Image (cartoon, rainbow, N blue to C red; front, side):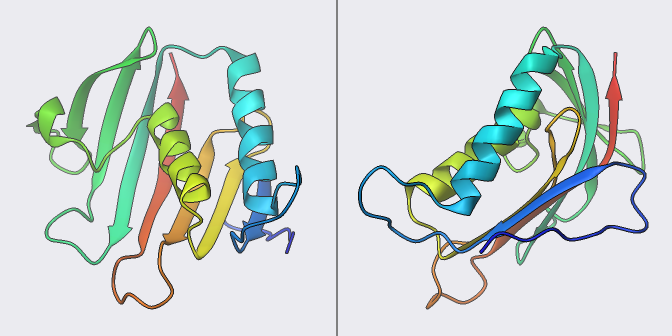
Length: 155
């Protein structure tokens, strides 16, 4: 399924691709992979290596659902801070708070492992993920994972 979802409260132009990840025969790709490829191409063309992104994780997990500012320089994460308190968070503890490339990797992993549902919205000009929701296994309860980009700033 390919659909566009308006986001009336968002300041970002949005490209939304919703899809159920299913195995397809031959060389065809599903809408989730198509959207991911397109968004990743836009991101690569923009060649943004220095930025900050405020990300909030959405999951049923301990203490992880808070906004975190991820600072990226030269394409690598250089610092992370709690967006509400400004307190630093050790990069080694930041697994759940990815950079833009990290969000693309999470989405690619979901596609590669045939996740049950993948829903993603992307910023239309630069391609970075605005929101992603993944249900890895239809039968497993509370293993869903999501991220929302609250703010993006090019440096």
